[in-house]
Image (tube, rainbow, N blue to C red; front, side, top):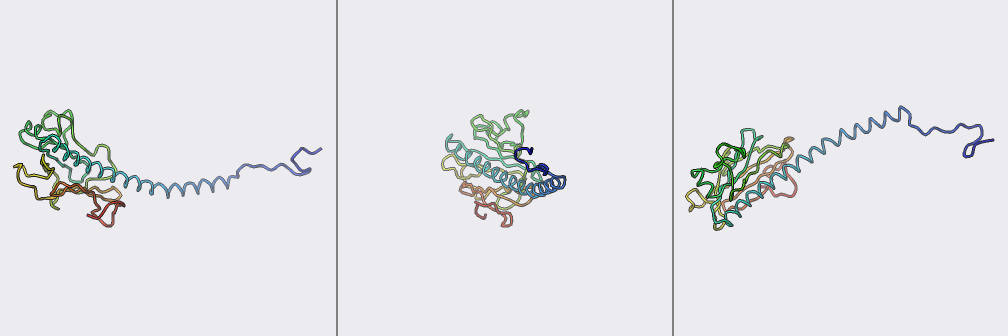
Length: 216
């Protein structure tokens, strides 16, 4: 008597995978992963450099608004090392700068620095953006009016948010900018602070254009 669901004289079929089929599956999966990883890494780097540019721009605009809000001149400091792997942007209000002997803040100082008056603070709160949370890009450039400078600062006027010279009267006639570039050299963005204090994010290199931003 034949078992239900089978044909007499015919063996039941095995539904497992053969060794060849398993090897083909592994090879196809490995190829797919090899193609996907570089694409994913490229996406991560583009996203990180975009986020950092937006964070720096937002930070500078906040410093500008704080100058108007507090009716105090606010000084923004930019620092980076030669290869751009270590960088920071900080801000200090007029009261804090007076306590620091009139010098702009040192945004690369740790919160527990021996000289707390040199730290970047606005109304007593630390005001700083640094490379600590980013590792997929460098601050590849920083300068004043197109001239590279590893360490510079500028001031925001407390009345209209314009950039002022240290005399607190004369308008600062220079553009200030930082350039961020991904480690794979596929993407780059620049944050520019114009003479009027307007903050803009743009593409400095047509071969490394990040979609959504205009050319510089």
